[in-house]
Image (cartoon, rainbow, N blue to C red; front, side, top):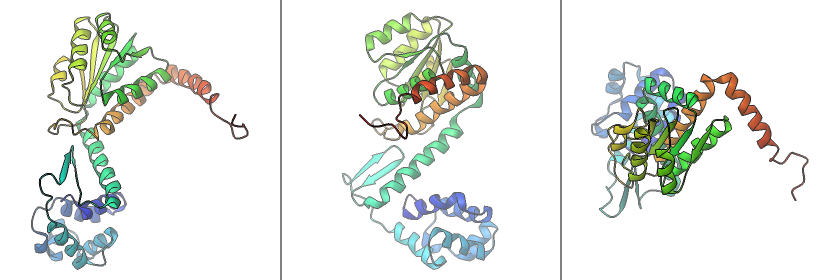
Length: 294
């Protein structure tokens, strides 16, 4: 049920009472025909009272259960877009029949779903190993191409703010040179949404052959790059559809923030001092309230 009603429910889900969340979960997971929904059955299956069901539908924005049910039936009857009339993206469908005002809600809903899936996919043991590897590495080199460059730059910036010796190369030849010159004291981080990007996979192979520890950030656990990872952080286990990557950065950037905060937590005294020093330098490059522009 990927429709307007679902988006409305997800928007107010966090503000619902526990009993109302039971009804929300039931409706979101309901696979039957909506015209067959009865308030008595919903209350019975959710083990809540009928007034609780009414409070839920009013919280979603409907006057009563009949109006709510009608909205579900209306969504069920919406015509499926013809082939060529829709674009299937990763976890997100966009068609010319979508209303412009509904797109922000669909984008945020999809992003929230991906972040929740990322939290479920990250293994605590691998996460701890990743943070430890970052904190003990003598040198850190980050590798990525295309969309992952955005994530790689963000990670580079954050680790540099912590005073860690971190580098990234945009030139493919320099990536090769840096990878073969790594040592056992170094950490190579490969970022690849699909896990199949030739350049990034090859850098993990070369870095491992050089003796460096390899940390991989990818969205797919069984992707090619995972074979060359000493430490693996996965953001998802969904099937990959090539090219449908508009949400890839959402989960990748969440992993970056986890690593950044984790490193700061693990070596708090040392890294917090460096971060404070960095912040002082950066603050000098910002306009104050009384400063004139030019």
